Image (tube, rainbow over all chains, first blue to last red; front, side, top):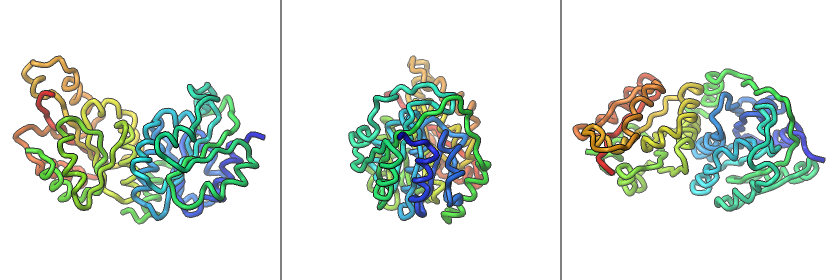
Length: 190
Length: 163
């Protein structure tokens, strides 16, 4: 059975450890309801199109001992594929989780350019990221998550998830100013 | 005079930890100095929008990044710049090379880049200083320190000769 995004993120939440988790778009609307460590969560809303992995990359370069997980959509990933090459060239403790539903869900559910065709794990490997995973069912993700989200990145985890139509654009659960101050304080970043 | 060693010295005076760049011909000449400078990490990105988001992550994690790019990349990076500067309100600083600046001043080029660079900076409401051949990296240091003291984003535009 294909995973719902909430089920997929619930599994991820149980394996995130002390890592920073960056979410954006659809994931940003779901993650706060499953996360048990909001102090280390950063909801990138409002966002720039496709740039959550780059923000996570910068965090991971700055905080290599802690590590970072970025939960990104397939549409967001397609908007800035170059960041996979940048990550491979500057390896960091970053896990990119691609929630692939083939849709731009935050705009109501239009089909992405790569829907049902693009191999995100293959793109990551071709970019030079050697560690990739693909999970198509909740059962497989539950069994494989501990290994996939273990050790240090870079790694890309590709999850096939259910798409939803008619969704509204998610709102940030906390003001950005508060999030920036809270994360920098948690990281002793000044 | 801007060259690799003098730019590195300026960055070290500012305490910069990471240079995120996608260079042009003029800035690219600083590569050797930037890659060998103690305490500096050069991060090469594929597209300029990545650069501002990556700089934001480094800043959130406690580092002191700067972005180097060409004016063409500034145009491309607008959405990312907007997000970092206006949504996240981070004091990110960058240097953008203005290609064909002098040729444009003399009416000797059809290059549209120098036509739009300063209007774009003004549209984004980024405080900047244009540095020409009379300026030195010390002027970049001064602009950076002022932006940091005021906890705001800022930039310098580097006037460049013909390609």
